[in-house]
Image (cartoon, rainbow, N blue to C red; front, side, top):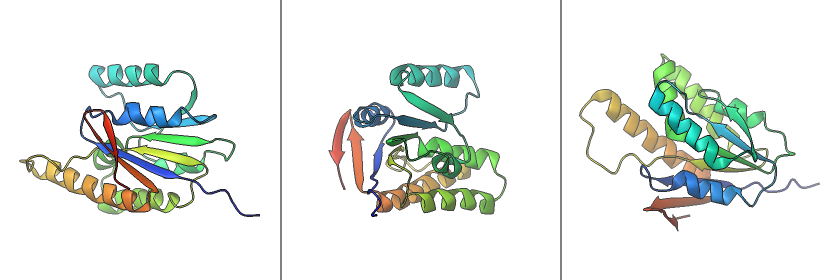
Length: 175
């Protein structure tokens, strides 16, 4: 018996471009939704952001809070679910840079995630930030993050079935 084809959709754009709201709209058509949240509440401002995001998506999602092991979180979702909404790749990448000491550890997490994408347990919608469209950051860590985010976004876009670029709340399908 042939397995049902799973769709990978990447939603990208700048800060406050409407990425998360659009991803939520895409996910509304599905039953049995899973939300993989990568953000960590490290301060009051981030706690408020996380609360706002939880409120926006309501109670229709099973939420997995996973700041580091995103591939494992995806693998833990059974095929009885119809969509995973992963928000967001760039926050996850920041977590990897902050928590993991070696490049090898980070590469293992990134490779594990990229290897999961060709065969997810259900459709998956991935939110990421396009961070390389502004000025060159002044410090090494910021440039390293910008470069790593750009490379990760390129790899995910290559694997994705559909890529949507958000500008001022307007979705533009680019793949």
